Length: 349
Image (cartoon, rainbow, N blue to C red; front, side):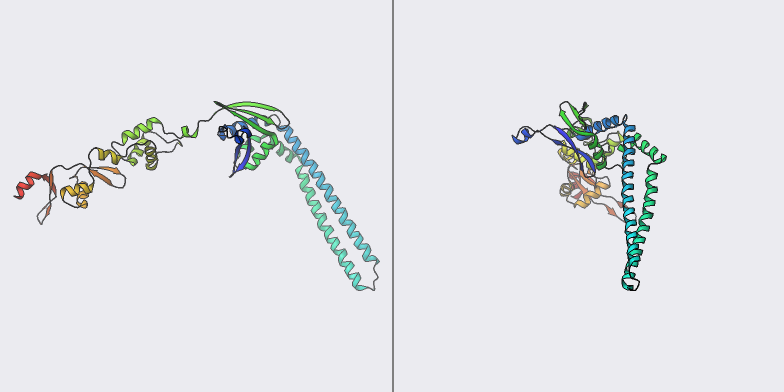
């Protein structure tokens, strides 16, 4: 498998060229490897290779700058000579015109003045650019170039260096990289100029393994579901120092995703299996409305267990009881309470 690099969505990402015969004959899937480990290894190799050649790179850059400055200066000289020639030609035309022919004389004089103005502008630009070119070749600029070459690792790793610039630097030095993926990733690098080099890195774990929740956390969630809901479990896991695969603290949603992924019974299902009743079921048994049941639960008259964060509860079976209504008055009040159904019937009779 051969790997090249392309720019995608602001990052430098590898893309892989599979064996053509495999694709053509619909063979087994081509070998694959996650890119970060390969990218890191190639970057480290590139920085190592650049270290002994930093001075050579600096000298080559200085030489190229000097050549370009010389070429630009030569081009500006030719432009200046051409402008001087045109201004001189316009002067001669004006001097040879018949003074009595005022229209032609005025036109030639205006043309001469225009050529002189163009020559003046070009002369000023030539002087300004000459000063700028000389600043590129002074001692300060040369030291800056040497420092730039010696500081190649900082430039390569700088966040402000775009992926396109890294790709360009990489393409100037490396022709391609061939990968052989087994228990480890074997990389065969072909440098520009024909030199080859090989290295190997540990194959990264598959994302399915990385994202897998540890068994101890799954066991704790299953244990905590016997006594608490998802929100309470998230708080208890965080207090114990557990984190998800990203290193983030657990939340209600993260616990819920783990519970669903591993098929763990919800707090509601566990309570129902233990015989807990809904508010509507208790209300039907007592002959009251569900609102009364919730009020009795808040007052502690009925025992309840929360199964969700939005104040949802299931109730312990009240048994063979009846609700004795409360009473209020000027000198005191009595809260509602539960009494045995037989006693309630005897009192009623």
